[in-house]
Image (tube, rainbow, N blue to C red; front, top):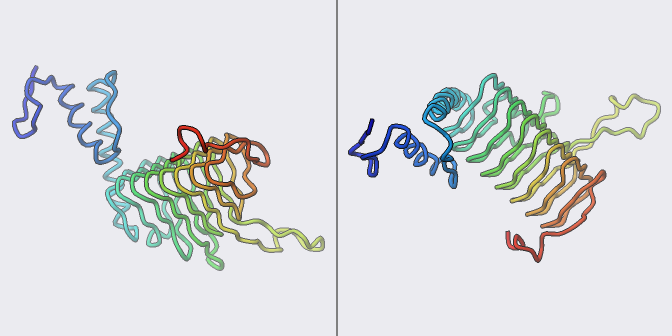
Length: 255
């Protein structure tokens, strides 16, 4: 069966699946620039995808009423939000199933436009009413993998277009432990900000500790623990993480 929408150019003489795919591709230009539906994806796949995204958009519209500021966003099932009036969510952001968001802190939680937060992740600026956290800022176009944990007690900033694998963790706060006569839990903490600059790639299970700046364009190998500053365009691996190479001088040197 051929279908034609006279008000949509280019739809005449298209089958139903092809027309649906064309419409979705046109929508993706705004939601996810550069993405197109693969040829092997059929009409049923697209309809199931659109049905799920419709529910996610509905949940996003409900969340936007609670937040300090939110654009059109897509929110999965069982997402929990605390201190929503300190949370800002950018346009076309996606929050995966089971994610926990908390904005308790001076700077709150800001999720940029077209950001993807993987399922069952935790973005927690603060939990203690007696000592709120600082901030978590995630720039436009970032992607954070499933089961990640980002604490904002000392402040975490992730630059735009940075991609991060599953089970990532950021810890901008360390326990004090110098006094042997007192339990560690009673000695308080020291807060130090984490700054991950734009266009970085952090692999799965990377851990970043307080006080660290990761320079723009850097690549951190899976499983690394980053304990010191990383120069721009560096390649880092190991525990603790060490610079093992550089992207400068290669095809990506101007990234």
